[in-house]
Amino acid sequence: MSIKDNLLKIKSSLPEHVTLVAVSKTKPVSDLMEAYNAGHRIFGENKIQEMTEKWEQMPKDIQWQMIGHIQTNKVKFMAPYVSLIHGVDSMKLLEEINKQALKNNRIIDCLLQIHIAEEETKFGLNEDELKELLASESFKNLNNIKIIGLMGMATFTENQIQIKKEFEHLKSIFDSYQNLKSEICNLKSLSMGMSGDYKLAIACGSTMVRIGSSIFGGR
Ligand SMILES: *Cc1c(COP(=O)(O)O)cnc(C)c1O
Image (cartoon, rainbow, N blue to C red; front, side, top):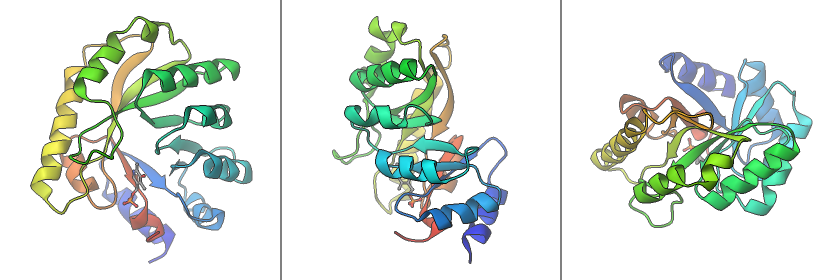
């Protein structure tokens, strides 16, 4: 099947409240243009330099979302255009995003990444760190960012029961902060689910799925 066929098939299978982020990392601009020409406008990349090169070359009505781990010193390169940053997992990073957003006279939407997987290698905040961050005084002064949701990645395993447990855990954290609403924090989006587990993620409450290989083929 073509990229267009894959994309349209997945899109038509998603409930209306679920946003599709087409994960185009490592793929050439010609592949992304195939998805663009099929009507898609939301792309996810995991390297700032690669995303910036693609942003420069492609039509300007695309929403570019950063889904990978971010080095603080590279935030400035995406600050002029990035539409959503999924993997925010420290106050230091949030402060840098705020600083660069201010320089660009923008408010940048962010998701806080929560560590739900078993592996130590996956990035993200634990529940205590999340609580501490949201309650901290310095957080309240970040007027150029907006936390619009949470993001998480399940353990890389075939065990559906474990994956389900991890997604449900993230959903329960998400639900527990629904009363916390301020100018800079209002958790509406829950980014969880990739090619292998997005159906399960949606069943567990995901509102945003990040799908790469099922659209563009293997990497
Ligand atoms: C690569 C990546 C995806 C997409 O993975 P696929 O299995 O190709 O769908 C989703 N989320 C993150 C954070 C990624 O790095």
